[in-house]
Image 1 (cartoon, rainbow, N blue to C red):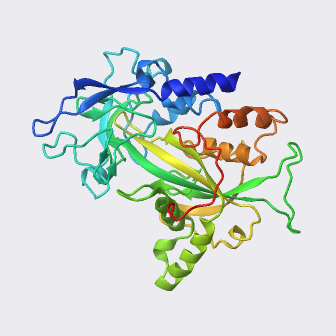
Image 2 (tube, rainbow, N blue to C red; image 1 turned 120 degrees about the vertical axis):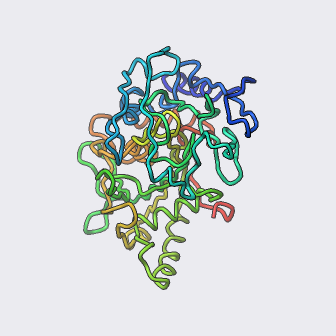
Image 3 (cartoon, helix red, strand yellow; image 1 turned 60 degrees about the vertical axis):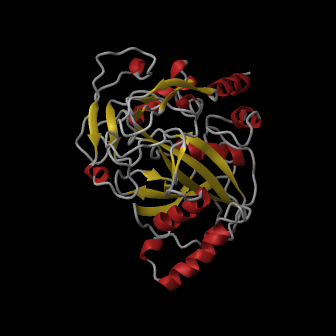
Length: 378
C-alpha cells in the first residue's frame, strides 16, 4: 500500500506546466517564461522522493540550510522547518546574498551575474551546450533568477556553484563483494546478507567520505563524466604520465564495461545549494560480481580527494550530501547487508516493490534495469 501511494505521489510530482507570465529580465534579453510546478504549488518538494529512506524530507533539506556556507564564513539567514516551502508566505524573508569570488571571476564553468545585459540564459531549456533543464521537471524563474524547487535555503546568489539553476553532476558508485582470505563472500552475522563494498573518497574541503563524483562539463556525456571524475579523484589520473594514463584507460574501459544500473537521477541535498542554484546528479552503480577487475584497481587519491579506499556498506556510514541514500539504494537493489534493524522484511517488500512500479527512464528515482553499456553509452 505504501508503495502504491508513493508511486501515485511521484506521478503527481512529475506533472508540470508553463505559465504565460514572464519573469523580469534585462531589456536586452528576450522574455523568459516563468514556470509553475507541482513541487512548489502543492507543497511536495523533490526531496519527498528520498524521504522514505533515511529520515524525513525536512531533515534532508537541513543540509542546504547549514552555516557557515561551505568554504566561507557566511552565515545563512535562519529558515525554520515550517517556512522552507515557498507556499508559506513570509514577507519578512531577507536571505543573505553570496556568490564566491572564484565564481564571480567567471571561469569557463560559471555563468555571468544574472543582471549582466549580455547574459540571456534559456532556463528550463538546453542552452547551447549548457544543460539548464532540471531532472525533476520545470522550476520557477522569479525576477530573472531560478528558484530552488526544494524551498528556501537562507541564501541567495550561487555560492560556490557556477550555474544559475541546476548544476549537473555525475556520481559513479563502484562496488564489489567483501571477501575473506580464502576468497569467500563475507556474510553479516545479524542480517545474513553478503557485505557490499564501494570505492569512497575523503573530500579535502570538508573531510567527509563521499562517492568520487563531480560536475558534468558542457556538452559532455554522463558516461564520460563518470569515467573522468573516478579517474581523477580515485586514481589520481591528473598526476600520471602519458604511459600511465594509457594503462589507466585500459583499466577504466574494463571497469566501466561492468554490468550497471542508474541508481538515482534528480535533486541532491547538498550544503552548497542556494535559493537560486542547486546540485542535481545521476548516480550509476558499476558492480564487479567476481572481483576480478576491481581487486586490482590501483586506487590513489587525487584532485579533490585526500584519501580513497574501499568502505563496507551499512547504515552507520556518514557520507557527504545525499550519498548515504544512494548507497542504501545500491545495497537494497543488490540484496546486500544494510542495517541490522530492517531484516527480514524491509528489503524483500519495501524498496523492490517501489522500484518495480517505476519506469526505468523516469527521473528522481531508481531504475530497475541492470545492463551492460552499449557503444552509444560510451
